Length: 280
Image: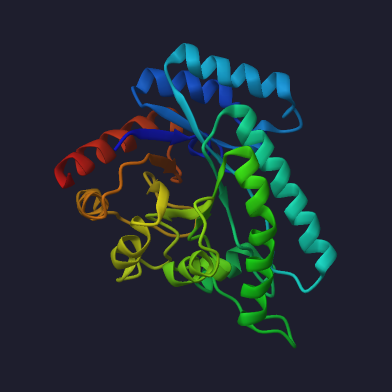
């Protein structure tokens, strides 16, 4: 399984975005095979010249740009709001195609009935529906949006990769419900080793449930302590789970700790390499 770094590892939405160009240089020094770009780190300059320059830089450094991590929220009773999110995601598919990335990370979205994110984390990443609506309504909205996006994904040659990532997809069952509803080679999973608050005891079983449907794996590291929670991960066990599922894609490091990424990313990669090698 090749190792990569998410540009998110160097920027956690505080201050000016850390340029992806600098992450590519760091990735080449650290000896990984590729980089996943967080779309928000492109900022306002996400036009074709910038994207092609990044693609060329990756080529000259011997790196893949294997994924684009995007943000969207399809959980809304407002059809126009959902349509706007579909259009936004169609643009993300084009950005990924310009970069030569094989997939975009997509989110289902959430109700936002707990507006404060810290309180939302304290609630375990789940929240009650809006009054008058149900979880089934929300899954229907998300399914409808993903279905509308599948033709665009196929045209772009870019897979929609749905992550276990709070809200409706806070666990594997939510991801699988949507994948099963829309069987397509252009819709798959991102299996994240984190995103389980409080060290959920079944998180390895959830990883196993997604591994066979995944085109990308996110490996979280919390060196220096996490912002909302700490979660120790047995990467040896992760490696065994992925190998048993026949997973051969990228394992993408998402460093999410408080330590300085300039040193902590290298430490996290060393721990990840060691663990996965033991689990192969």
